[in-house]
Amino acid sequence: MANTTFDEIYKKIKEYDTIILHRHISPDPDAIGSQAGLGRSIKLAFPEKRVLYAGVDWGDLTWINTGSEIKDEDYKGALVITTDTANTPRVSDQRFNMGDFLIKIDHHPNIDPYGDLYYVDDQKPAASEIIADFLLAEKMPITAEVAYPIYAGIVGDTGRFMYPETSTHTFEIAAMLAKTGININEIARNISDVTFKQAKLQSSVLDYMTVDESGAAYAVLTQKTLKDLGVTTEEASVTVSTPGRIKDIIAWSVIVELEDGTYRVHYRSKGPVINHLAEKHNGGGHALASGAKAKDKAEIAEIFAELVDVTKKYNGEHE
Image 1 (tube, rainbow, N blue to C red):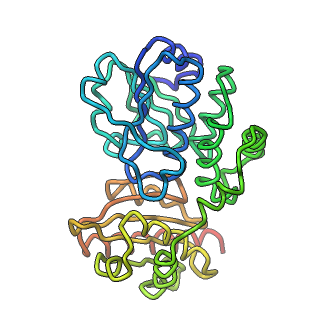
Image 2: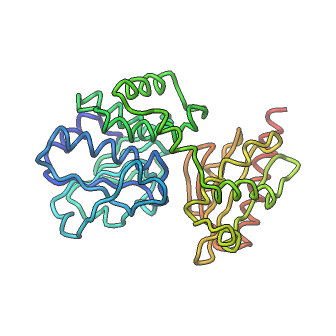
Image 3: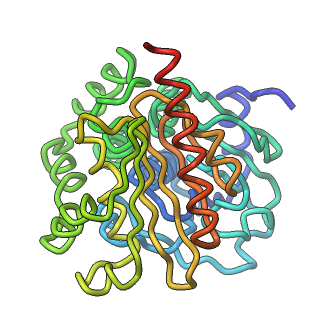
């Protein structure tokens, strides 16, 4: 199956009376922003349609959007659209395949080309930018209500326009969204603000950091550490970018212990490509930002050894 077109997606949206939008589990601003922006525009364009948002409300991201109460019967005869979700195990609600038709809209490498139609552009810095392009192409409403979550998604996934996939087009889209009158300062604050407890965890993550001479590093945050500071597993995600501020660290993993004793692995890099490493451990993502899972400490050791190896090779190629 080849990449579809915006026109084909729009045609399907017009066909269905119920549209259920999914995003990935453990969502970030781009997951919720792309889901909400698309859904709000559809509702404005077609007020008679039912538009539902799948996925439980997530921590401190409810300022972007909240989920809907969805029953199994709602999927009967429904169009299901996933945004910002690379593979099926990471879809926010595994009922996504109970609908009548499934469309995937994403910006991660298309390793799992699921859906009856998919639109994937892995050169885009955010799924929210793809949604903005789609709305513009199909002349769908982009009011402040629509622009707010889309802008939040772009700011979140570009690291406030810092990451390399950010393009001149990204800035053009951001400017167009800002012209709707959204409060861009409020969005920036909501994305960057942390609680005092999260700030303490950000500081302490460096105490748990192991740094190899190659520039590879990792830290494990245990459930005990989180509970001692009163931080939830979801709130611990604020630590992921912290090691990147250290000049000598060029690739790293922040690994968070879950309540069941397994681990969520966050990969980040300033140069070495790391998404293929994540794929080895039930994960995936972008070249410089990916996620994975580890079942125990032995797998964590394996993950770090792989990260050191990739970083050493990168150093050798760039000497």
